[in-house]
Amino acid sequence: MLVAISDLHLDDGTCGKSLSPGAFYTFRERLEHLAFLASIRSDATYLPIESIDLLLLGDILEMLHSTRWLKEKPGEAGYVRPWSNSARPELSEKIMDITQAILEHNTESMAILRQMANGEAISLPPGNAQGKPALETNERIPVPVHIYYMVGNHDWFYHLPGEAYQQPRRLIIEAMGLQNHPTPIPHAPDEWDVLANLFEKYRIFARHGDIFDRWNYNMSLGRDAATLGDALSVELITRFPVEVEKSLGESLPSNFYQGLHEMINVRPNVAVPIWIGSQIRQYAGVKKAEAMLKQIWNDLVAEFMDLEFVRHQNNWWNPFQSVDRLELILMLTRWTSIEHFNRLLLLIKRKLYSNNTTLIKSAVKEKAFTSRQADFIVYGHTHHHEIIALDGYRHNGKDIYQFLANTGTWRSYYDLTRYHPEQQKFLPFQLMSYLAFFTGDERNGRRFEAWSGKLV
Image 1 (tube, rainbow, N blue to C red):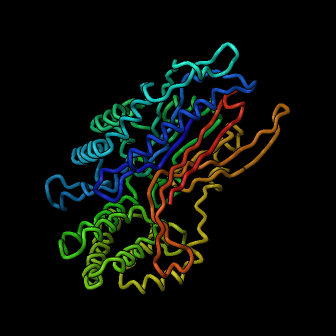
Image 2 (cartoon, rainbow, N blue to C red; image 1 turned 30 degrees about the vertical axis):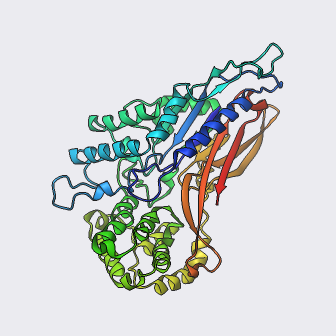
């Protein structure tokens, strides 16, 4: 049995709410239940599976949304950003610093993963002579979980080559009990033969999916390069709440600052300015500071646009060419007033909400799909959990089906209501989703199972 999850975005606690350990306890329980079901074979007999494969499909650790990037100002010793030369020791030191902080902030969650990897968290009853689970006995069979990590666009730093980046990789390998080596954590399955063999066994093909997002992946430079998405995450989304609190301090409620840090959990991303407006309305006394808030935002946007890294990006400022560009335009629009954003949203909401987050067009172009090597094309990245039927054919007298499966996310997030979005209403959700794939006679001979939970 192979289980795939992605987009946990475990952070260091400096930006927004972190994922609670409770999600991992729930996941452990559901994995154990899945393992029991997978042990029921095609002939209805019970034979405990020996192990579980767990694929972490990118954006597991949140390396971008951390105020630790902002400790140093330009010109100061130690100043570095994601787009700095990876050979600079300051960058590897910053990655080490943030990695340690994330692991420390999520100590309990990491311990659960490590216990699963060591065979200490999941167990099954043995089978009896009749091929049934021996539920009457206290005996249990430990089931170790083999955990494999692939990077996405928020944890791509672990893909960087070089000795300097081996130490942070060693930390996460030890903390999570990974099967990975300290060499660069793979971004594509062909970068590690263990993954290639694993995917062949389960007839899947999996990647994070960021390569289809021009905003978060540079096709010409590959995964070892920063993107405009990185710059936006650090210099605007993470920095804005910090600068507001620095400028206004105790004159505004602490809950207001906490609300600003929740910008990273707002969906769709283009609604971030609207979220800011909603926070102003929510807290009494903040309205009087709106002019200063607008000025801080405008100053940060101006600084962002003046960054050498941003100015040297090729052909990115092309309004309305794609949804990615549309999002960028909205995010970088100077915040003139709440009403301005409302009018702008109303002007383009048809285009905005007709955006289909699925990666169907990309899935059907994958070689593993067209060659029939994989029955499942698996992506993460979009945070949009879905199972889409792609094709069906007959092989050796059997009907074979091919699907696109998206792992979704584990996050708390705030979604802009679609009915009268100009009213700036957001609804909170907690999400948890995963995919399970079976091989041979596991799970009564079934091929896969998908689970998604949403708590309002």
